[in-house]
Image 1 (cartoon, rainbow, N blue to C red):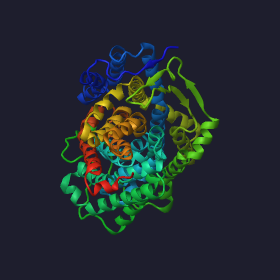
Image 2: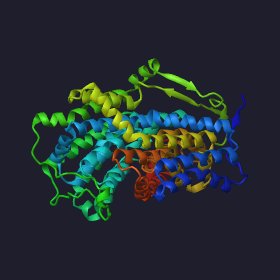
Image 3: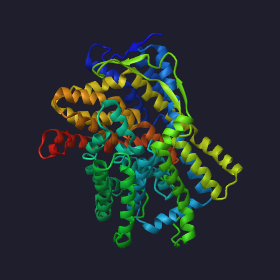
Image 4: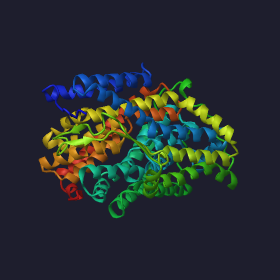
Length: 556
C-alpha cells in the first residue's frame, strides 16, 4: 500500500498556500452566514470544495480523500450527533409528560429575572454538563431549557454558545488537557495548572459578557452583584482545583459551587426591577421567530412537584458523572468496543516536520465504543426518566421516532461538518493554517493563542485542536525561546473562544432550540463576540510571556 506525506506549502508560496488552505472553512462560514443557503446544503457544498482543495492543491490521493470524508461522516454521528439526538429525546419526553412545565416553575421560583436565569442555566448549569460530558451536551441541554423557559430562539442559541466557553478547556473530565499532554509530552497536571492561571480571569468576565449581550450595559449593571457572585464562585474554584488538586474535576467542582452560591445569594438579594423580556435587547425578532411561551404559573411547587421536575435532570447528572468517569470508560471500552481501521488510509498518511518532530503516521480508526459514548448514557437517562414518568415502552419508541424525524437534517449537517474537520486534519490543510500563525515571531504569544481558537472553530473540539496544534505550539515556542508550557496551555485557553462559532455547535444550538434554517443568524450574532474574547485571551497570554508581574504566573 502506498503511503503519503502531508505537504504544507503545495504552491511553493506560503501566502498562496495559506489562502488555499483557508478556502474550505471560509466557504462554509460564508454560506452559513449569508442566510441564503440552508446549513445542511452549505455543509455538503463545503465538503465537496474541501475534497477539491485536498486532491488538486494539496495532492492528497483521491481515494484517501474520499475515505477520510466518509470516516468524518460516521464520526460526526458517533459521538456528536448521538449526543444531540438523545438530549432532544429527553427534552421531548419531559415536555410530553408535563414535567418541563414544572421545571420552568422551579426555575421561576428561584428568580423570574431573565438575566439571572441565564446565569444559573446557561453559565453554571451548562458548565456542569461541560465538565461531566462535553462534546455538545451543554449547549444542547441549556438551549433546550432556555427555549422552554420562553427565551427567544436567538437568545437561547447565541447566549448558550457564549456562556459555554470558560469551562471548555477542562470539559469532559479534563479530556482536552489529556489530549494536549499526549501530543506534547508535558505533564497534564502542569498543563492543567497553567490553563488554570489563564482562564479564571475569563470565567469572571464571561458571566458579565453574557448578561451584557442579552440585556445591554444598563441591564447588566442592575444585576452586577449576582453576576460577580456567579463569576467569583466559579473562577476561584477553577484556579484552586486546577492548581492544587487535578485537572479532571475542575468544571464539576466549580460549577456546583457556582450554582450553590448563586441560589443562596438570590435568597437574600433580588434586583429592584425584574427583567421579564425573553428577547435580546435591541433585536427586532418577529413574532414568527419568537418562542410562544404562556405566562409562567407562579403557584409555588409542592415538595413532590419539585422533585418530580428535577428527577430527569438528577438522573442525567448521575449518569453523566458515571459515563465521564475514567474507570467506567476504561471498562466499557475494553469490553464493548468495535474498532475499524479504515483500509488504505490508517497509518498511511504521515505528518512531517515542522508540524511533527519526526514523520508520524496518522491513525484513521473508527472506534465504535457504543457503551461509553456520552449519547448512550443520555439515552439510558431518557429511558429511565420516561419510564419513571409514566411512559410505556411503546410510547417511548414512538417518541424516539418523532425525535429522529425532528433531528434528521441537523444530524446530516453535523456529520458533514465533521467530514470537513477530519479531511482537513488528515490532509494537512489545518497544519498549513497553523504554520502561518507560527511565523509571527515576537507576536507569536498573541497569534499562537488565536491558533487554538482557529483549531476549535475548524474541528469543533478543544481536544481535537490540542491534538492538532499542541506539538506545533511546543516546537514553535522552543524555537522562539518561550516557555512551551505557556503556549501549549494557550492553545487550549484560546480554543475555548472558538467553541461558539464552530459550525457543529451552531447546528446543535439550532436543533436544541427548534430554530432550523437560522444557523446564519446565530453565526452572525456570536462571531464578533468570539473574535473579541479570543483576542483578549491572546493579549493576556502576551502579557504572561513578556510583562512583569504576569510572567510570574507562568509555570516553568
